[in-house]
Structures are given as structure tokens and as C-alpha cells.
Length: 174
Length: 228
Image (cartoon, rainbow over all chains, first blue to last red; front, side, top):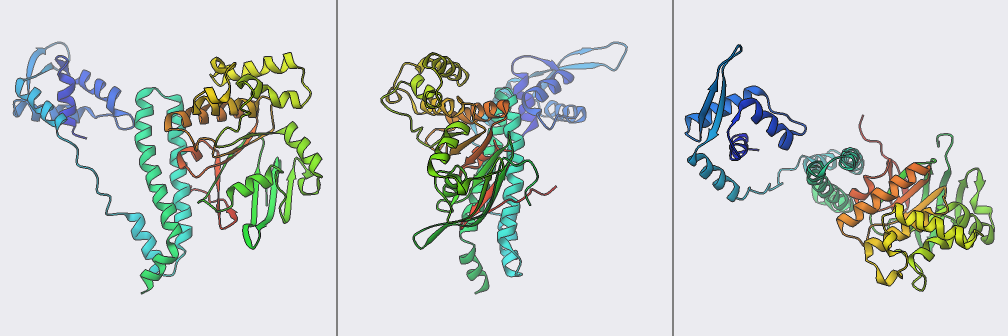
């Protein structure tokens, strides 16, 4: 995820302090991985340097000074371009699972067992996500669904590979 | 070795249709309140396993104990009585009686067990509300959507408070959202009442509602534990 673009996008609704930005990011997008303060401030320094944000106000008090950031016109354009640009789909052509299955066959190990163990591991994660989804809000449901559909695709591949294992073994042995 | 306290415990089940073995030494167990997914590719024997466990068909050999009783030695009438009293069923296409209203369909298992009409209707209405389809109570199955029909089927399966529900691809004919809602409601209601669910499915997203899974392949059922 592009943290810079996400923070810029959050600034479009109005200026915010670094702390507010972190809180908004964590609330909407952080889920299992909240931002570190250091990441926020280093990102804002870079955006400042590139002219995508500006310091809108500086508050001084007993503690360290607090900067309030605002997005610039260049920043708005940058966010618009980022949103309009499609994400490059993952090609999924470098599969560790495929490598393991082939290596198991090449070395005379039990590839079917490997696939069964992997299925159990995938389902364990899917159970956890399903449980979280059931108790969660719409954001939780969408995030978990994204993961569940990807894991489901993996499992379909595991099933298909299990069904083709004899043929793959012949190919590997040839 | 099956842990103690199993509600159903089956071992070495064999069943062949002509020369083709559908089950070839399958073992299975389920405990009260547990949801167990039975997974496997098409033709692997998972539906045959469910039918044997539910006493719908008899295995050629092997044993099935339900609550300590040997299912395989019961006569047809005794197995039917057991199914009516203790088991509930949900199939892929609901299999509701088309001539009856949805409420009458839900009340049917109670009526067959001798519950008076007014009491059966009251309980049916309660389950339709619980499954969030009370608005279709007076409609016939042909007049409701697939998702609504399947919820009515779940209500019918649970209305007589069975100890085991056998669900064979219960979401197979539904879209993702309706399928999830049916699974939410089925597993919530079953867990709340301590009902065990044998859930046959080839969909991992449905199996993820279970407590554990067994995989049937070439007529053999096996359970694989995830890495710790």
C-alpha cells in the first residue's frame, strides 16, 4: 500500500496534525498493521519536500511544536492520478507451493500429504477470518472477504493439484 | 481411536454401488454441538458418507454408533423413527414440499412427531423469525427466492431441536451473500442449541464455518491437523 498517497487522500477532507493522520489511517486502513509515528513524520517530510503538502499551522506549547498539514493543489492532482491508475494484478507465477509439490515428487516424498497439510493450514486461517468477519463491522467484513477469496483460490488450486498428482509425478519423473 | 463422548462414531465403512466403491473404509466421529465439514472432490464419497451416518442408506460393512446405539442393526422403521426424532436435514435445493406454505413446511417435522397443530405452528413461526424469513410464512416455496427457501429449509431442520443436522451442500445453489447468511444462521442456531452439524461441502469458504474438517478422497475419510 502507498502510505504517502493514503495520507494525502486523508488530507483532502481538511488539514490535520500528524497524530490525527495516524489515527485516521489506523481506523480506516491499519487493521492488523497500525502506522508507526515515525512512518507518518518521515512520509510527511517527503510530501513537504515534493510540494504535495504544506504546513498550514504550527502550534507551540509546553511540549514539542505540532505542525498541521494541508494538501496542496499538486497533492490533490497526485491523489487523483493514483486513484485513476489501475493496480497491477499479481501474476502469481512464482508459487512456493508449486515448488514444494514438485520437489516432494522429485525426491520421493509424499506430495499428497504436503497438500493435505497445507489445506488444513489454509482452513485454519480461513476459520479465524470467518469468525472475525462474523463479529466485525462492514470494513472488517470487506477486508476479511478479500483475504478469504484469495485463500479460497489457493485451496481450489490445492484440490486441482491433488487430482493431477499422478500425472505430475509422471512428468517430473520423465 | 475416537475421543470419548462422541455422538456419532463410524468406523471402516464400506459401501459400493455395483462394482464401484463409494466408501472404502471411512472413519468419522462428531461430538455434541460440533460442526464438522466433510470435504472432497465430486464423486469422492462424501454424500454417501452423510447418507450412511444419517441412516438413509446402510453400509455394506463397518459400524455406525449413534449415542451408543448400533445404527446398522436397526430395522428400516426404527431408523426412520430415529431420523424423525433426532436428526434434521438440509439439502442443496431445500426440498420443501411445494404444496405446503413455508410455515407448514417448517411445522411438518413437529406434526409428524405428534405435536398438536397450534403448537407446531407457533414453533414454526418462532423459527422462521429466528431465520429472518417470517415474512414468507404464508407463501409457497415456489413463490420465494432461493436464499429465503434455504433459510426455511434450515428452520425446518432445526424446529424439532434435533441432536444432529445433516447438511449436504446447503449453500450450493446460493450466491455468496445468501450462502454466508445461511451459514451464519445455521451454525449460530446449532451452536446455541448444542446441535451437531455434519456439513458436506466442496467450498472452503463454507467449510470455514466448521470446527474441523475431514477430507474424503476415493472413499476414505481422513482428518489432517493444521500445523501448531
